[in-house]
Amino acid sequence: MSYKTIQHSETILTELMVPSFANFGGKVHGGILLSLMDKVAYVTAAKHCGAYAVTVAVEGVEFLHPVEVGDLVSLKASVNYVGNTSMIIGMRVEALNPRTGLVTHTNSCYFTMASKNEDGKLMQVPGLILENETHIRRFYEGMKLKEFALHKRKMMKSDFAHISLEEMKSSCLLQRCKIS
Ligand SMILES: CC(C)(COP(=O)(O)OP(=O)(O)OC[C@H]1O[C@@H](n2cnc3c(N)ncnc32)[C@H](O)[C@@H]1OP(=O)(O)O)[C@@H](O)C(=O)NCCC(=O)NCCS
Image (cartoon, rainbow, N blue to C red):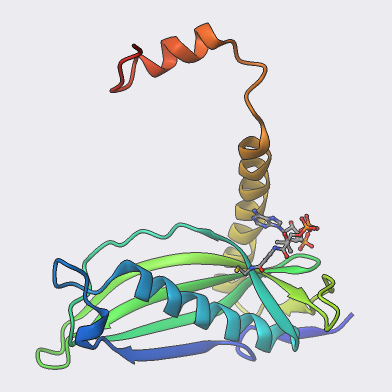
């Protein structure tokens, strides 16, 4: 099996937030940022596996601060973890106000990408060379994230058939709903 360094695929994507990216509140639309995140995740994954990669799942997207029109957004991404056919790409998003020089950390998240061959079949990705403590911590975190994601996937597929309607009702009624 071949192994690659994290540095080999590290990618930074920078884009100026133009007025057409604004939402009705005058801030940058969340969908624009998601699209940029997907692009940088794709490039990082494709560089690591040396092939085509698809987005499988996204974890931890939280918009901590609004991004303003006129900001220069930078997305820094690297491979944190590799499984057999999947890779977890960690990214940090920052917005720079070029007039004031103020940099705001707007978001950190994880994209799971899977590698596919020309026939659209899943293919094994190269292993990852961990060179320092941060790399080891991120890889370990990725292992845990994958376990959590697969557990969540199983849960979402369940129709909760083992829970009675009465149990569901009493749990729902502890929340802000009325059953009429
Ligand atoms: C995602 C996809 C590859 C999963 O295929 P599958 O037949 O279920 O295959 P598997 O269950 O073996 O999953 C493949 C890998 O993805 C991982 N995976 C699958 N679902 C996952 C999830 N929800 N979260 C995290 N990882 C997941 C698996 O653990 C496996 O990783 P590994 O090989 O490193 O162990 C397949 O459903 C697909 O191609 N989806 C479309 C993806 C796409 O087109 N994205 C673009 C959006 S338009």
